[in-house]
Amino acid sequence: MKAKLLVCGASGFIGRNLFEYFSALPEYEVYGTSFKNGIPGAPPIVKADLTDPADVDGVIRGMDIVIQAAAVTSGAGDIVTRPYLHVTDNAVMNAHIFRACHEHKVKRVIYFSCTSMYEESPVPAREEDFNGRIHEKYFGVGWTKVYNEKMCEFYARLGPGKYTAVRHSNIYGPHDKFDLDRSHVFGATVTKVLSAPENGKITVWGDGSDERDLLYINDLVEFIALALKRQEKPFELVNAGSGRSVSVRELIAKIIEKSGRTLGVEYDLSKPAIGFKLKLNIERAEKIFGWRPATSLEEGIEKTIAWHRAHYALKAGA
Image (cartoon, rainbow, N blue to C red; front, top):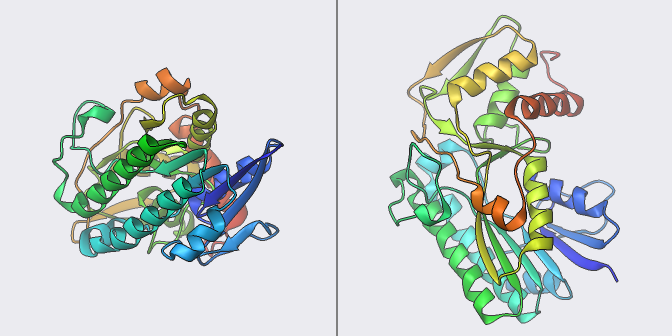
């Protein structure tokens, strides 16, 4: 019998990639939720408000596996100027989802956390390195993520389901947000590079010294597939990243190079920037799941640019 698998947030970036991957596997019967956007040709996607307990109960009832990829997300501008956007709704929806998973005896639950609770560090951050000192610009979102992780651990202790909290780094690839209002640095840079006039300039927020640990979406999907099969303990908290960091300046140079375009870069110091450097230690993921990322940054950039060009009609003709 096929396992019934629900992807919450199946029309979002991470959720859509997961929905497409598991839908192609014969051992799963895959469903998804969407708050605003549907997926053409995907009738198992249902519209649901995951802050509404009745909607949550309706979509989770009868599921064997729930992958919680739904979230209110945006870019650095909101993190700096309107940080509350990432707190209230995310705390509410996850509280309802985890409770429903417990009440309906869901066997496996995956929750996507992030790395906003880690301090800046010159060495790769381990899961146990969280010490309660969160960067001031990440204070709201960081503590919200920690709270949600602890809810996973709480319900795992109650049983019978197993919970996995994934502290993933910056994810990029197909179906990412490429609009400049909501995208992160990778998606925003790809859009700027491919839409700029030839021999023109792109503008980057901040001075480009921030460093990011970047992970291609296919590697994150493979992480989830392995976690579902190989987790033995009721609860696991695991990093998922590339294990290295790249500066925004270096990332922009690589994206311009892989695009084959000739562009200049100017840095706008008046715009919001986080001012943060981080990379993840991924030894635990390899030890318990046998996982390591397979896609280099250069290969991931090439694949993302190719996907973007195939799916977006840009005025610059790139």
